[in-house]
Length: 260
Image: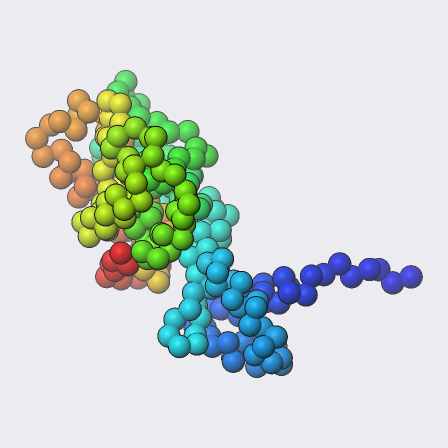
């Protein structure tokens, strides 16, 4: 007796479409997708539209598509704890050693920041966030830096119908306030967030396509941050570390873009 086939054809075809994109094939038309499967345009239309609406594909031009932000977001939730962490770890540890401050690495999953690596400071006044902790992106420096990698329409879709008020200042309390803050932090290339007795500074990590795929920070007790010129010196060291991590991830350095 033959085994029953429980395959869902539409789901299978959708996953096969995503697999068509590679490092060499970064953009496809719907006609090229249909030709690859030997089917009509109409038979793929609903699948492509569903993938686009969910953010797994992004429409570019009249009828071309590329991988959307959700592929990076979901994919890096698995890969980052391995590949990015392994690449970033030596730099984050060195950053901790030269600053005597805790440093963390995080990625984004949806509207949450996930801490995936840390180098702990041994000082009495130290801010150490446990691995695996999740925080709403708009409430942390690393979270907002991760959001700066999104276009305005992607950010609006991500937060559509979501309340962001009720968190302690200086977290933005409205969506327009969040958008404006992300624009500012995208332009300057770093984020800052104040909490009880400490300050976090964060900068982005980029992949070979100039996408923001991770963020690193230093967590600074207020007693240290108040020293003259401390913020500027820490930002210089953070940016240098992030640039080296990005180059190792991408294989080469690229000029930063500002999607917002």
